[in-house]
Amino acid sequence: MNFWRKQPAEFDFQISRVCKHCGNTFQGKYCNRCGEKVLEKRDQNFKNYLLNLLNAYTFVDGKFFNSLRTLLLKPGKITSDISEGITVPYMQPISFFFLANFIYFFFPVIQTFNTNLYNQLNKMPYSGFARGKVDEYLSKANISLSDFSSIYDLNSTGNSKLILFLFVLYLLPFIILTNYSDRINFVKYFHLSLEFVTFILIVPTVGMSLVTRGISVILESINSNWNGEIGDVYYSLFLALLIFCYFVPAIHRVIGFSWWRSVFGGFLLVSSLILVITIYRFTLFIVTLYLL
Ligand SMILES: [Zn+2]
Image 1: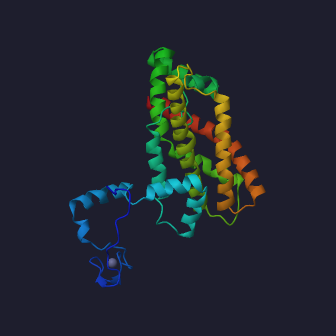
Image 2: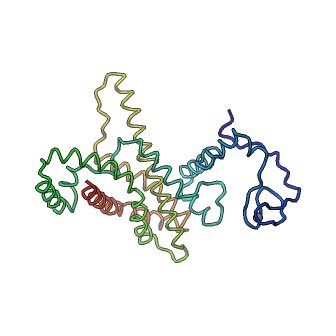
Image 3: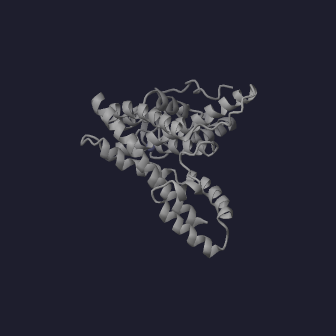
């Protein structure tokens, strides 16, 4: 089934049509005054009707794959195209982000956007505050730390996937601060933030989950007893490098900085990720604690 491909064109673009909605006379598939689509015979065929429904959710017209390919191969191109008014080849950046977010739901291996209770209470700059809050909760609810811990971790994993959009909002001011240009408007910065977080979701998170899973399957098949964990420090450094290599060409393309300025801006932005992740994890802690 040529499910992925566009339907061949058999539409008469030459004849004049009257818009059913606004009465305007026009040529082509869409009314040039109100945007209403011409109802074609194949729209009323049930199979096409189902395909069109899917289309709304979007694999059929190839926009998802085109967005994905562009995201991976041409850093920053979606953002710069959208701000030039080229929107047809891509999914809406927000929809693309939420689709990536949805895919991320099924890849629990890597904890970039989640932190367990142990780390919240011991490894974060606000851990003292967190311990105080948890102690308060434990004495009020009258349960042990280990019981609480397992409930907390379960909820935190779920919440981390629901509040991911906050990461886009938290990253945004840091992009502006580290890569400010008065020629770039706020919406473009916002789209860039969306693109960066979508990239982080898809490549280092989902991609690396698949890669580590693949490696451990191979190693298990040759009876090695590697447990699929990568050392946290090496993994974080590798991740930072990967993200840096993505940010620099994206900044060069979108902001229009020279390569040197882009490298500098990319370096500052990747460094500030530590701060963004900390603020995000703090939010996650507060949300998880208060939703328990
Ligand atoms: Zn119309």
